[in-house]
Image 1 (cartoon, one colour):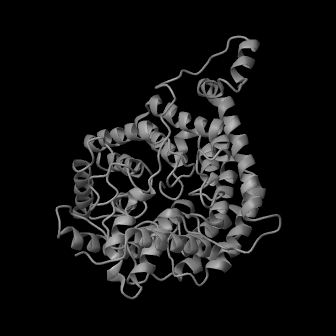
Image 2 (cartoon, helix red, strand yellow):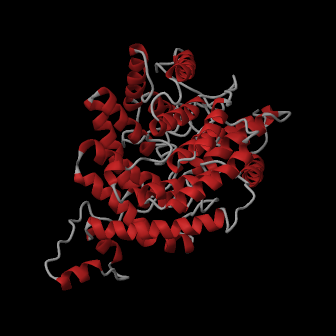
Length: 477
């Protein structure tokens, strides 16, 4: 006889805890799963509900269904020859609005996207920061106020509006005060993101005192011994903050001998668990061997490929990625975890083909191996066919999935991928507000956040202005 609580009872308890934790910490589905599991597994008599818990908290429970892709494989841009034709090309009516946007030349479309992004930015600032600042409930980049600051920094890079940079710095200062006692150390969900963005914003503003302050604060961050290795809460999430600082402040801002110690620990942990299976490197997060960008192999490999590595470490990364390619679904999609090889459901940055595609694009650049390029393009086909999700954000939504095509375009120069990125962006520009208002698309539990809400959509629109320079925020460097 199997002992344990019924699934229905555990499901109710999990949802209650997730809701409570989200209200307390500003978590979303990729964050609060770990928080909730950790809370449940710390309770007395956990063995009674652990079997049901493992069934309920599998990734597909949180899977998003997608819209059938209504867009043609390719729409050539219109080239009006008369003023009347030009006006008609730029006039978007209700009935054919999406097709008109798809055919619109880059310059006028990028202006529309820019206007939409800047309007969204103003709304996001008002909703998350207010007119004169608000109490910081969640300081993180993921779903909190630092995401607003990051969007403002992006807007400054595009428009050179110094007001954006000033407001970015003010918000980071508030996040600094709110995060000073945080034990979370990563760029996306921790203290390192606050200090790194603060330092970079100060450098751009010519504020040497603040630059020194944030660098000193960054140096004070201590990595706990029990830290996981994944991106959102773990060691590579801290390493990404180091990469961000070195990119914007110059190589050596974070010395390589310091990052090398963290890399060594990640490689050591990956090899230790990898020896128990058939993959050279393997990692666990809350007892599950995830494959995705947020908590698993794709994200860890992605960051490691930007670090200084020994030849044997590079070879382990190469073989780990080949292991994943050889064990992907026949559809070209990727499992959420080592334990979940039968459910081909998730097509998100956090779990599935989108995050893996970005990692494979980087692998194709690092190793020059055609197998990685072919697998990246195959993952791109999955995203085109199944990635028009009923969510708006970049973690698990259309905005994030569009970056797959931007990354493939930068690697291959194939205009097919530029068109596909444009198509996903145009779908959002044309329909997101109506679909969210009508309840057909989820705007996120934190609807103005960077990773879950319309903040990510605004960021994508700004990146579409110069697609050759676009970068998935806090992932591509």
